[in-house]
Image (cartoon, rainbow, N blue to C red; front, side, top):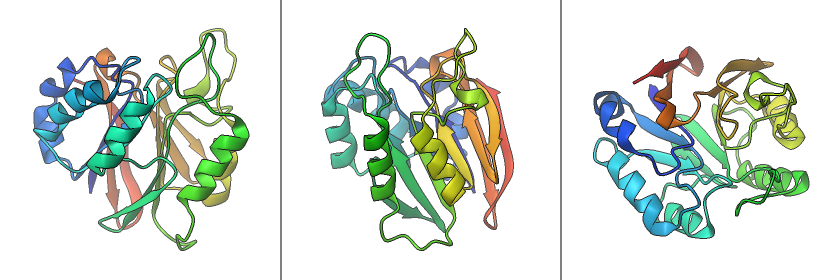
Length: 219
């Protein structure tokens, strides 16, 4: 199975057309938040309709820069993973939208306790032994993916604790634009390709319940 991960599009969708071939080839497209740049429902629709031209199997969460209308659109379109789960071809995808409070103010922020509650909700009723895929805009703390330019780690303790407990196969994340790269927590692989408008995306191959390839590519 091939999953393509996009994040932090911020309404700049030009690069979607540049990777049309790989999007069409993928089994599903994973979007880890900040679909818009302080946009609403129509802005999200414009971005994701562009993705849908090439692949309609879309799983997404909103980011901290997405207003509530984006969440509404994702839910009505059947794309939304935030606080819930969806089965897909032997995988169970779960999601976490928004982020911890940021400098200044963004429209979709949560406390650690609220993030923990959403993550708990996402696995409610799921068998313990299952092939989990976590899609979280907010990266876990103390990883390559949550380090900002001054060396401070700004990730979530709740997200890290969840990963340590449930050990999903992979966590598609984003939010921290400079936190580009692939890291590991236990058996879980983490991937933040950076904003799509940087021209990067995550390429993940899964076979027989294992990540057989995980790379960050440039358009």
